[in-house]
Image 1 (cartoon, rainbow, N blue to C red):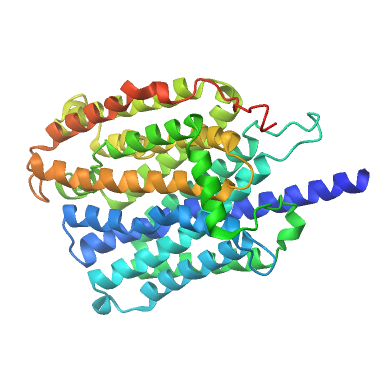
Image 2: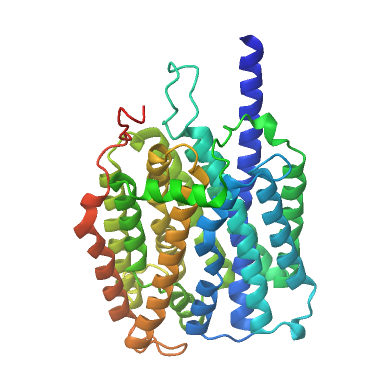
Length: 441
């Protein structure tokens, strides 16, 4: 028993190292993406609408996450079914960022940049799917302290959330400083080196040593799709996913427009933009700690709808900001951008923590990778739709790269759209306990 306990502790330690690094790198991806924003705006002279369309289109590989999840659930590579996909994803990302880094500035076109961003996001999608599956599988394994009851405390989800948030804090902090001193290509190269380190760490670990549960389904993709379809037919799983997707898709994203407003109209320094993102990531880190300590056992419906209302309040606050209300009160524009804009940018991700814990509990055994990938895919597609709606909204209210007079009206419409999903909040379960039938028990 003592040997088995030591083996369990060792496997848990390796899992935390592997996931900690994986989610930290996932959070640190904001480092090169901060450089991408300025490179597209200042280097390739892309306007605000084109910037938002390009950045949202670059997320299209994220939509295919269910396919990656089904493949990783169904096919083992070299006797492993999670770590090889993490390694492959790290390789694709490293190739994309290093390729952009070594190309001369004059040799990079918008189409070339788009290709490498798509390739990088394809690699990131593979890594995220495999990491999310490991989290779901590990969270459902029984613990020795609760008589074999599956661990549903959400401790591992909170750990990886904090790792991702810490990566985001450091990525934005270092990125805000680096963008002033180094070229975007240098930042791309630096991130490529980090990806190589992640690759080396991944291939140094044998999946067998992690004691992950074996997938009993060996019938290939067709059988795995049937298992996923069966899970999605369950109302307690389908309704929350539908609500979360709608809550993202209905809200027009004005991130690109606000970026241009802050940098062009207000002349906010790039370092301040970086610090605002740091503040937002620090808020995510604090949120994970607060949730893990005080809100873990709270109703998911109350927590998630509370976040949705807070988002709408922040958007109304942005209306006051654009109308110079805070400036008249003596609040500097840069201070507002750091605090409120930084928090608003990450608020929409706050609801992902309670939601991911809920889905991990409800997920049937054998399709953890597929279901979590489907959730992330639905969210990615919804956010792309929201991004395109943002471009439409900016055009509707007459916002351009030099004329922001219609921005307050656009922000009010955005806030209104944010509140609409609350009409269907009953789709979110009001408790954290998965429904297990006698047949399934």
